[in-house]
Length: 284
Ligand code: AMP
Image (tube, rainbow, N blue to C red):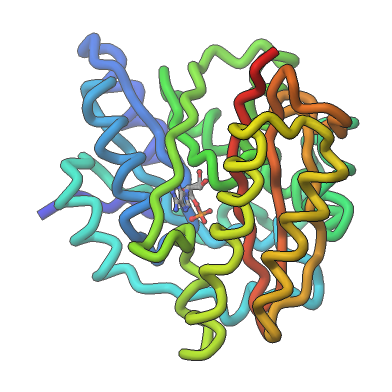
């Protein structure tokens, strides 16, 4: 059976031990309720490093006051079996009170990239993410860390943070894993009613429409967003948060996709907020 470490000092000690044995360490940060998207990250990590640590921590600082922190799914037995099946070596599952003890006062923020897209509707979200990821990097001291491209803005923010702060960890982005109908796998999909789940595939269909348009030679971002919006209208239950075409590194808007771009969206189905994106490969 796979080992689970709950204690921060014990995790640090074990990492030191592995490093002194000359082993490379990979970290896959997650909030648990693991699915095949997470599994793909763990598999990728086990191809790249000697010792794979999967952190499972529902991080309170990345949730807004009225968000789904309390009801976020938690299932450690399930997570253990997923990590085992993907040949991860260890789960690190610290408690919230050990990560953020009384008097906790330090946050890491990345400017510019974080006020757009998801950052516009979730103002403190990315500072929660960069803070917890910095802490996990300091505790686990990985050589390599793995993040999904489903959270493309998060990936860009983490890459910028590690570069700006000279954190000696290599960041790898992994492709989005989808359900057969195209819906991006997410721990939050379990919140959807049958009808919402059925309609949620419209997100991917709309992004595919954008990709097809670009492949047929359309480069005007406004026109692409317009047509994508028409596809989204097929779902009566969906409420759009945003849809934008941006540069996938800086998250700045792109008016013309000749040189490429990323179309990203967030949408509500009832009380569940889902995100997705697709890279657009321009011909320029
Ligand atoms: P989460 O547990 O939702 O915080 O996600 C942990 C990591 O798994 C993040 O790097 C996510 O981008 C990644 N991830 C979540 N869903 C998927 C997916 N469907 N495909 C690939 N990576 C994913």
